[in-house]
Image (cartoon, rainbow, N blue to C red; front, top):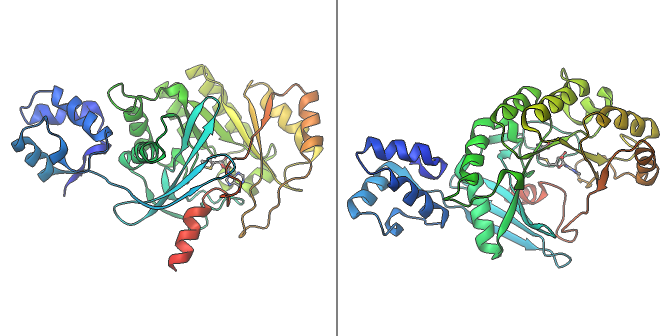
Length: 342
Ligand code: SAH
């Protein structure tokens, strides 16, 4: 069985070359080549033919194939649908912001978290993505879009903390000075909240921004919207966010999709303010993207809701929605392609 070389970080490559009695600087050379998007070892022209053949006999290089691309006429947002080597479809989105170009990447094929408003979880989890497949979304989106990517958000399909080891290795590869070199402060990881893994992530001390998809301040509503809340609870999650801050010095930010008649009452605004005030974390309000399979509607109460937050001194932003014309809520592009195939 050949191994996936793009999923190896620099120390792993160094260990490999050492075991081959090759000079350790080969690791940096190969790592650099992989980041140029080479598809074969033959393209690595500063390695001997013998070494290229040896690598080719032991490793493969992942190459995603572009299935579909949609470009927004409104704001230039680009949605990509890629085919992995085992014919799964994964989605990435490139967005332009004042602070730079951002790519939103998927971390799993499908998702098993079962959130009530999310299109990505409808077919369940197919498999985890390898570090190489997360990296490819950055490399190939950047190359196709012809725009330098400066920020990466792990907010596409999948739950990053449910694919913990691969996500950590991907972050280490993404961060490496010889590779694409995106600093941790330019990376955001969004989670539906798995407190044990929030603790584990905190132990690495990586300076990324952790975003918690909170969506409700009370357990009854949150457990209905985000099943992973069952047996955990908002209190335990907020406590995990506070520990994360203590370990990393980085405040957690909160995401809250406003849903009509579900999580947008004055009582919930007050409770939300009470729960997150102590954390000092920023609140991102998002208007729910309607998903055709789901019977949930975007809230019409944002004004009354935010008035209460303001009174309580909570810092919030109403997130601008990009790519409205190519839209379909999170994960719908892949879903549409799957439906077409059926
Ligand atoms: N599993 C991770 C990351 C993927 S989802 C998480 O749960 O955070 C990225 C963000 O999009 C999450 O905040 C998620 O709750 C939100 N989201 C999913 N479906 C949505 C929808 N229909 N409308 C608005 N936000 C949605």
